[in-house]
Structures are given as C-alpha cells and as structure tokens.
Image (cartoon, rainbow over all chains, first blue to last red; front, side, top):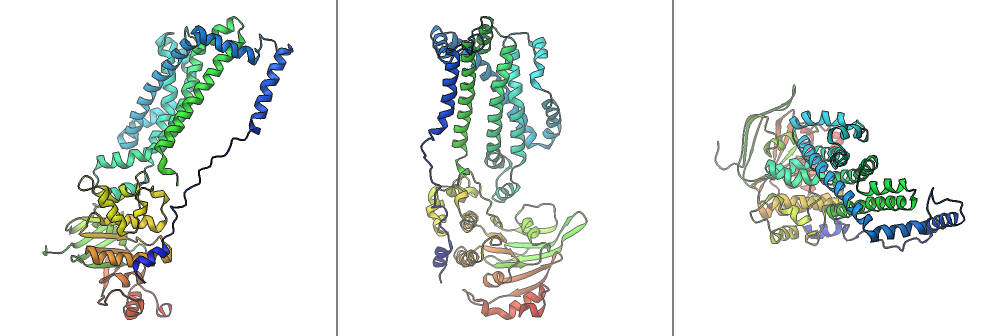
Length: 271
Length: 236
C-alpha cells in the first residue's frame, strides 16, 4: 500500500464537519413573564396601589425619559458620565497593562510589583471615597480615580496570569525554530495572554460602571448620578428610574462590545 | 573536528542536581543518515535531543551541529491563533515565508485543503503532519524527531512511518529519531543506537533495502530487544 493510499484511509475528515451555526428563533415564551411584570407594575400604579412618590408607573417613566431627552438634560448627563468612565478606564487600563506585562514577563518585575498590588487589591476600593475626596476635592478627579482603581485590579490580575501561564511547550518550539526573545514575546507570549486579558476587560468594565455610580451618587454636580440625586430632592421617581435604566443600558452595551471583540479576537478558539 | 559530519558530540555530560542524565556520551551522525535512538524512559533520550536542538545549553562536553536544525515534538506544538498555512512557515520568518511555499509544503503532507483552517480543527494525525511540514519547510540539515508518533493511534502511526520514510528519501536530511518503539526504529533507520544510563551502549547497522518489512530483520530485532533488557520469552 502506498503512503498516499494509507494516509487517505487513515486521515479522518474532522475539519470538514463544521460546527452547525445555530440560528434558532427566540423562544417567545421567555417574554411572557417580563411583560406580565410590567403590566402588573402599570396596573398597580394606575389603581393607586403603588404611589408615584415610591415608584412611578412605567408609562410615566417612559414620558420622563422622552422629556429629559428632549430638554437635553439626559444627553448632557450621559455625556458627563460616559466621559468619566472613559477617562478613568483609560488610565486604569493603561496602568494595569503596563504593570501586568512587566510583572508577567520579568521575575524582578514580578517580585517588585505583584506583592503591593496583591495587598492593595484586598482594600475595598469603594471605601476609599473619603480619602479620595480629601486628596482630590469634589471635582472630576475623585470619580475618575475611583473608576481607574476599579478597572486596574481585575485587569492587572488577568493580564498577569495570562502572561505567566503561557505554554512552555510553545516557547520551546518557537525557540527551536529560531525565534528571538522579542519575536517570542510578540508572536507567542502576548497572543496567548489575549483570552485571559479579555476576561479581565469584561470584569473591569463591569466594575467601572459600578465605581462611577457610587462616585456620582456620593457627590456630583453633573452627570447621571447628579440627575438621579436631583430627582430625589423633588420626589421624581420617574426620573430616578430613567437614570437607572440608562446605567443598565450602558453596562449592557459595553459588555456586548467586549463580547464582540472576543468573538473577533478569539475566532481561532472555536473548532 | 572531522569534516562533513552533521552532528559530532564528545563526552556530553548533563546533570540535573546530583543525577547524571548524560554521562560522557559520544555521537556522530553523517549527512543524510537516519539514526534512531532507543532507550527506556529516563535513559536520557529526550535530554540528548534537547541539547542538540539548542534548547538546553547547560551541558558539559563538546558538540557541534552543522547546518539548520528542525525539531518535531511528541505534541505538534502549533500556534493555535495562526492559520494552518502560517504555522507552516513559522520558522522561515521573512525569508520566503509566502503562501505558495506553505501550500506546496501542505500538499506534500496532503493538508492543502486545510491551509485556511485553525489548528484546533485538525485531527491528531493532521496536526502532527503539520508539525512535520513546519520542520521540513526549513530544509533542515538535521531533523530531530522526539517521539513524534508516540501520541498517535496505531493506524495513523503506520501511515506516518511511511510518510517519514518518503520525505526523508526526498529531502535527505540527517535524522535523529528518538523513540521507544523498536519496530519503528527498525523500519526507518540506517543505524539504531541504544542509550542506557546516559551513554550509548550498543549500535546496530541496518542495511535492508527500503521499503522494509518487519519480517526482514527479526534477528536484529531480537538483539535490540536484548540490549534493552527484554527477556527471550517476551520476544517470542
């Protein structure tokens, strides 16, 4: 038997069996209970069971959303808040990436950077607000620092462990292929840390929103937190709910963006 | 140093702590020669291969390897985030690392249809062929094979033996095959070396014409097994 025949008989066509793209219709039953809850909420409000100073009806909330959007109030608050998250995230992520890469790659870096980071990580960073206010006043800085702190720790931990857990076998194989240190770093170490880094990115974005909300609620003179606090003064529960919904939507949108990024960057992982 | 040898090693000694894994090992491999290295686990086979591959530099003694070296390991060790064809030309980097070359190398391994696939979608045998393609595309003067068929199923292994024999005949690299499969060594090699206690304790030269059949060299097989300490009744 020739090599070719033998190979053809042995080589299984595994790759040709592509995973079936599942494109199911959404299960409409899953909408029943959420809709029922909203209806119940509306009915309770309409019958006076749920007074508007405790919680406005869904309909009022919707109208408040449209009104604040029309007046520009919502857009302005939105812009302020998203800037805080953006700037804080940029600082936190930059610090986490630099520290994580240095600690991941160099033993000295690991020995010097990792212990203090691990110690600081145990501090409840939201509890730092009083200190941050003393240090930075009540302007934009404490909010941005709070977001940056919330972002930096989970991202650092994931980048660090992603780099540390690189497969030694791949390092060895590429060394045998003549890769230099820098080529190994660029073509093997960093790509292999990407999946873990993206996990860290999702975690840190979730925390970024949380940090923003806490920071803005404690004190602010602009932004979504201010909108909500201001509404509280006037018992406008409809506006409060609008603010909460916007927070929730922003969280969902950023999460979806990271998931999209994951799908693009990790295509090789799917069989 | 003698002229023309692909590998020449004198008195290679390697210690891990107090344990001596290689003790004063001598080895010569001529250009185009296919050498199989047999030995029980822990005899130092893989350590020797790693030293020759330049993956372990903390070793006493002298050795020189002439020309380009490629290694294929027991596991294919592909970069999972590179398409199949990019994995093939990984060791070329810049000099002629183009798609055409990759496709020719893949065609030789009957993997052409997988050029744009991700390595994860390959079967064990396909991945190992890709690993061989990656090693051979560098046109090595010395091909180091570290139990490259050890993790494959029996049928795939047979096919790989035939493939390696073909490729060796075609490209003519020197080959050092580390294995613990006696029949594999007898089918493929010009010379079978037995490694024990960190030194080469026996050598068998095989002159049978290729392609070989197991029945051709049952006499050598018996002697090789005896060298490895397998008793007579186990052979029969």
